[in-house]
Length: 344
Image 1 (cartoon, one colour):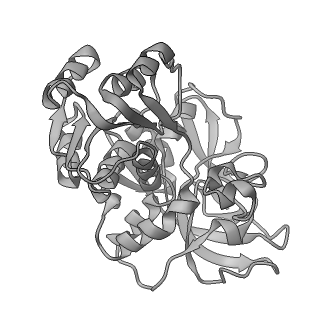
Image 2 (tube, rainbow, N blue to C red; image 1 turned 180 degrees about the vertical axis):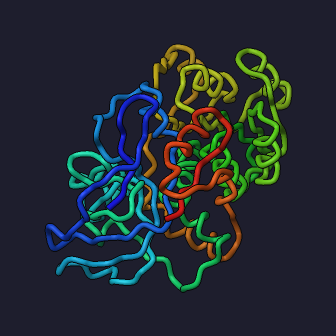
């Protein structure tokens, strides 16, 4: 089968991988319908995080079940399914506590002999605990991309809001105007935030942020951004601050604009971040977040997507097929695209 292969920094190429097969009774084989490039994939693409050359890559996909192992009971051949970016058994103590991204028996796509999501098909371990069946049939071209966002980006934005304790009537500030930050706007609005401040310098992203629910746009960065948010909030700061990038600059901004007693929800993969403990100690500011437990969030968000209450699939502004996987990465790396959709 054809699949995206990480070759080296700046090089993602289409290559050949063995066709997936059932190896243990808890496996399933899924034929991928839609996949995409994640902002976290760009850390590897840019050489800022290590990734083994020659390995498959990608961790977001929806597809159709082709085969299931003898022990699989919750899904069947022909089901349209969403796969979270970690596979999990759903039964270990961490899963039962809702942190499926830390499943004791689980793991990630594209590593340790597991297929990547940016390919024609893949073997899914722990299929019953991992895959979520999408009810109904004949879903529209508008709905399918939104279903794909539930494999990671929409749930990750939701996790930022949940981690920060966003509630009805809050003022929420969101640092980052990538797909995660934009989905965090949807999440904050969905949880009842009254005012949503989006920190963005890109006009197209600003427009989408406002359409998703942002009430204010702050284009400044650094100290100027801090001052702008504090001015908007009468010098108090945001009731919840969401860090959706993963750099030290974005974290320092998120911390600076959080009001005393609030929480910074962070979901950006940390790169060079320093937490000023003394500063947040005296301001009683908390920091809470990490990899989203996507499997735990999918059911409630899936219901909202199918009812048309949210449409996070609008973050996809670049579309190609698997032959264009290299350009899909380049478009995001060069900020010509918010998020690249790959249709198989």
